[in-house]
Length: 70
Image (tube, rainbow, N blue to C red; front, top):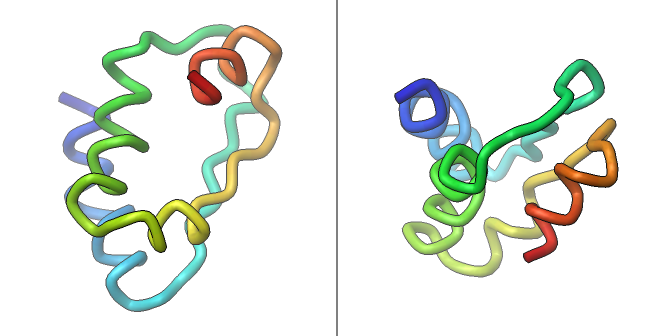
């Protein structure tokens, strides 16, 4: 639910305004595939591929980066 709330309240509105969204995973040890899908893939499905270029991922460790890249 947290990913959905964040997506709906912050990520999608920012992308619709043309803003860049920075997601900092530097304090995260792991993240589930379902969390990352709700957070990243769903906005891209909803808003199109151009939204992909507006999302920046920083601080993701190798495990999280692998899930994101998948």
